[in-house]
View (cartoon, helix red, strand yellow):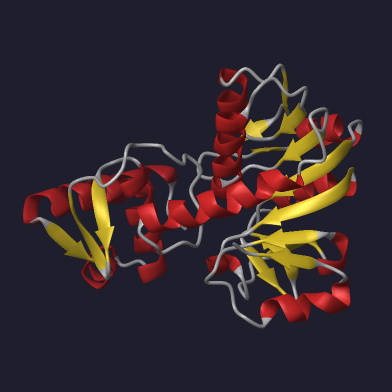
Length: 267
């Protein structure tokens, strides 16, 4: 496994190579750095998020297609160009806000890029509601507090650099004392066999607890996560109430959720 320094150096070289030659390909970079194509795709997504290059099919070209940090958390598995990815997340977010039970709702908002899009939608539509929001995302807390939401609580603990999620015993202890009307959750994977899953056991603990401590749970899940499984399952399908996805979701997946009494909503 690469060290943080090695990853940073590789990404810096990828940006330099792309700017020097005008473009790069995933296969060439994977061979050059002796890593998997999936690793290179994650590197390119992060570099695009930071405005260092622009992803295209099979690789990247020099230049930026978006403002840095429109969505600051980075998905582990998302090979879409960032503008297309963000459009999907924004459409999911717009549906998500319709599930807020009222102007005095208590909400948990999980860390993640789709939940960040949800928080940005909340911020744009905020007109003085007395929401009580608890999150394990510094980005989400900043977005909502900057919009004027008067009660935004951020859990304490360790901040993961990639997903920007706060994890660890302190966050768990704080969350155990809280309750919410509704939890808005992100996920790395959603499958019939494995339920909701993520790669980090620490994140899985926080996610599972948010669902347990909320009366109702909504999973904000773009279609790239459906039928995908990550290492650690944090909830079974029967534990969640609604999945909100996009129009590219598999047509039959909604029916597959019926035995679990889980609703699926798409635009």
